[in-house]
Length: 284
Ligand code: SF4
Image (tube, rainbow, N blue to C red; front, side, top):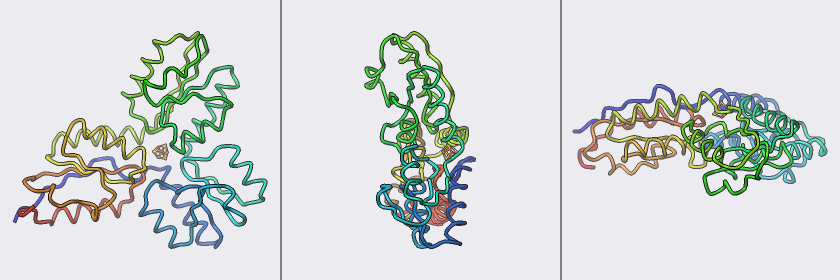
């Protein structure tokens, strides 16, 4: 019988922003029946399904809500969405992470101070969409192919998606700095919690033969963890939970590392680790 030695990253799983959003949701659901989340409360299907069983209705658009209480998720919402919810007379409970709120405030302040707002991040991520809604005209830079969107001779005010990797942001800032601008102001909006998870995942995946990154496939911070680990350890797998594991990948491996994104609950991590620790993979 072959048993795997399993090491868990020092820093992984729920961050304070996600923990707060879930506890706010649970608090409202304990008292009210008609509760909506504008978009999935966090990017984790298991958590969304569990809260749905407690009554939380997840909708994609403001137009789908006609009554009750609306929860603003940790990624936030754009000001025009909030205004439309208010116009409908709905009760709004804001669980936007304070660090995401900070990016929104900074973007609007930069624009007020005459800067062209630039954000380094993924265009379609809800956090970015909400920030884009906080200023009249925001340039989103996902990678070098977006640099052409930068205006010439402008005063650029740059922020970044909270869960970006610092090295990547540094590289993009270098690329932006080589363009034609009159002033460049950069405000660090990276989340320390996300950075600590990245550093701890990379340290761990150097020490193991196989690495598992647990979390939602839509979760930007989890995908970032998986990308960073893949660069160091080619045997890296991004999974949502134990059921998704193709057990044949364990064959011939004796040490495994486990990390998880900021939206992955402890129960998913614990279940994965305890199953992996007792799984006999001698036959693959
Ligand atoms: S990862 Fe950071 S920015 Fe995102 S919700 Fe968690 S604490 Fe907030």
